Length: 151
Image 1 (cartoon, rainbow, N blue to C red):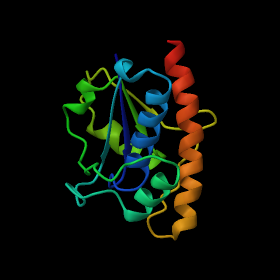
Image 2 (cartoon, one colour):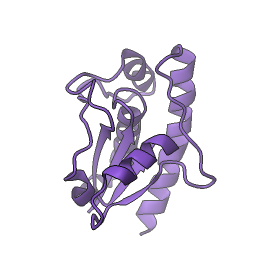
Image 3 (tube, rainbow, N blue to C red):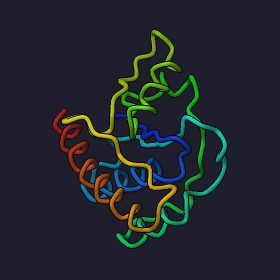
Image 4 (cartoon, one colour):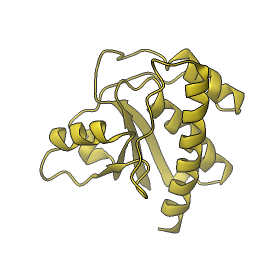
């Protein structure tokens, strides 16, 4: 089983979308038993809250339900519990690298690694930003599934 965690700043916009989209893709590929998926934020100010309503709306538009997800903050244990921890942007990747215990086995990397690209934070924008982010994450999750399913 491969364990994957998606990380953004508050765990209410990008990372819940990534968790939902990737979960949806593996379910449709019949690979649910091969993956454990979660998401978290580097910050704690949204702990226990639902995803941003705009994230819920754009996910619902594409047949994905993320409404029951709850925000949480990355813990030290996550670095031992997950094989791959994917940061939505370079700032969160830098934070993860500072938080990670030196001997933690988790592979830390950007969600979009080739070429390195940040997934923009849509929080301060309108619905169109969430649509753009959905498309970026959907494409990234397709690539991730292809990469991990070959392994």
